[in-house]
Length: 217
Ligand code: B12
Image (cartoon, rainbow, N blue to C red; front, side, top):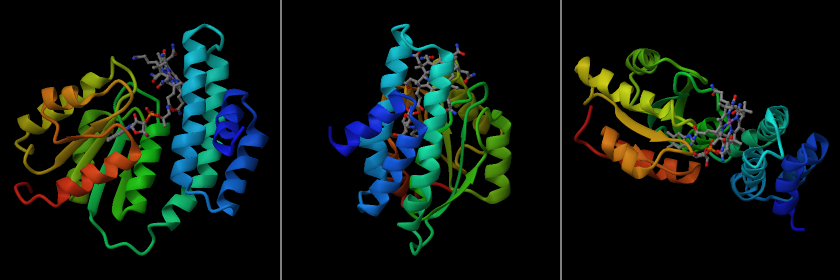
């Protein structure tokens, strides 16, 4: 088994000690922390999700796998942030998981990657009401609002955010980027979002492309 497979396995087997050991070892071995997450630990949590769907895992196991993942991110995130310490600022981003949705692992990862790439991140956490995204974006004079949704039922909040911006006459003031497992490019286009990305690396590319545009703000 290679180190990435071992990482995935440590999440699936809910082995916190092993997962942390592998995360620390990967830093010592100079393995890119983003790769450790995307190729190692994240596939592990996806596998845990599949086992849950197949009825082999129940909610407690799923919660435990997410906790182990979070412990790993605590170790790897500082390494991700360090890689971006001396970058110029590309502007502020307000990010959060949409109302009714407590999934925050992917959102945290996207936030950390954007942070490491030179954006200033205002992380509102999870289960964030639509109006709070907008109030904070105005207060902080943000360039971009990023919302994460992991449930088909909460994706609609991403649409409401854009409708709310339009109602308040603020649609042109902020770029809006959406993401999360059930979210697609089609959905982003349908609701009139400015950007969509399927993972954290892509999110950085799309965010940079958006803020370099001059037809907004
Ligand atoms: C871990 C997990 C949990 C954990 C969450 C812990 C936490 N703090 O986040 C716990 C156990 C608490 C949980 C709870 C529930 N969960 Co859950 N969960 C998952 C699971 C297995 C993995 C999610 C995850 O962390 N993936 C790893 C990260 C790295 O990936 P990601 O989130 O997709 O993020 C990446 C991209 O999507 C993207 N991205 C994410 N956000 C953003 C934002 C922007 C702006 C951009 C550009 C990109 C982007 O970049 C990220 C990095 O690459 C998924 C299964 C799955 N395959 O997604 C189910 C899943 C999402 N959960 C599901 C369900 C149903 C629930 C519950 C309702 C279960 C219940 N009956 O109580 C509750 C929800 C409660 C609530 N109100 O929110 C369903 C959703 C079904 C649906 N389509 O609506 C799934 C798909 C499982 C399933 N197949 O049934 N869950």
